[in-house]
Image 1 (cartoon, rainbow, N blue to C red):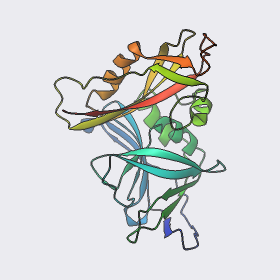
Image 2: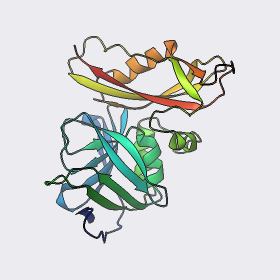
Image 3: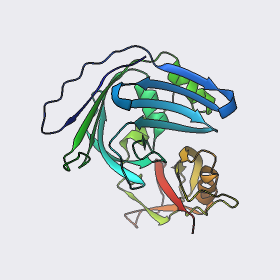
Image 4: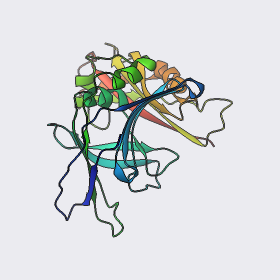
Length: 256
């Protein structure tokens, strides 16, 4: 199945006309892969996948990026525009969401994914990518379930409201978790995103690996181990008890 995605410089007018067929669904036990895919013209695509136990939401075919992260203005459906960091894998034209399960659950309803990548054009202009994401009755759910992710998660509304720092405005780190590079690994770099609930004393509990890359690098486990030493506090130091909220953060690993 192929659909159309519009890619234009922001100096031009955007118009999108897309095929709204269902997602393609792929299961490959040999590669430990379950994926839901929407393929568009020109190598563009939207993927929700479970690979080696790690869940990813990816957009492929973007203008290449040499850095490990890229800033993207993004909105889906009727949401407001937001600026988010997405990480870059081995393919510099692929961007991975830091909150993939949240996005995947949103995409099931179908809608317009609008992305603006700054200064990505050949002359330094901003590029805008417009995808019509088809509704998915089952394909995306199967990728979530393959990775043990809930099909519906009440935490989504709180994660979606967090600023890019991952902390509500009233909280700050007293001691931020610092993950140690996993022993016995050979990847030059890796990334893990973790979300947790806060405890009254500022400790972290009920922590979840939102995503990690590479999938078999052990970076999610390393980030989870580091949560034992993490602690938050109120920005207003006169308030001793930390409210129960969701926080998230990203750990970037580099081999020394």
